[in-house]
Length: 107
Image (tube, rainbow, N blue to C red; front, side, top):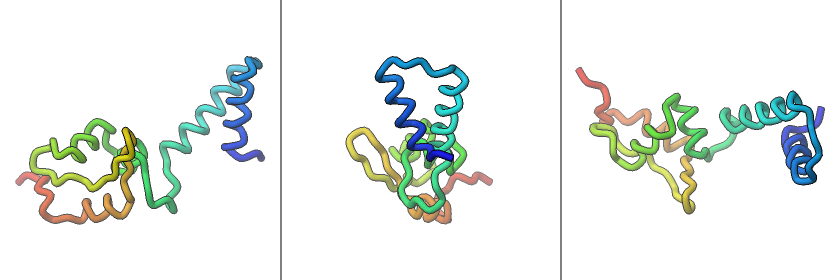
C-alpha cells in the first residue's frame, strides 16, 4: 500500500494539473491526511498547537489562552513561537500536567 505522503503528493499534483479525481478518492485522501495531523506520532517530541490540543483533549482556542496566560489560576504551558506557528514539546505538556500548583482544581 502506498504511503500517505505519496498519496497526498499525488493528490496535490493532480489538483495542480486540473485532473479530475473522483470525489470519493479525494475525500478518502483528505480524511487520511487529517487523521495523521490530528493524531500525532507518539514518538514525536514536538507538536503543533492543534496536535497538542488534541493530546490534551481541549480546543485550540483554550490551549492558546492557557499558553498566553489568559486562564485564571492556570500556569501557562511552555511553548516556542516560530512566526505564527506555536510548537510545544510533549515533555513540557507532561511536566505541566504534573505541576501541583496549577490551581485549576477548585474545592
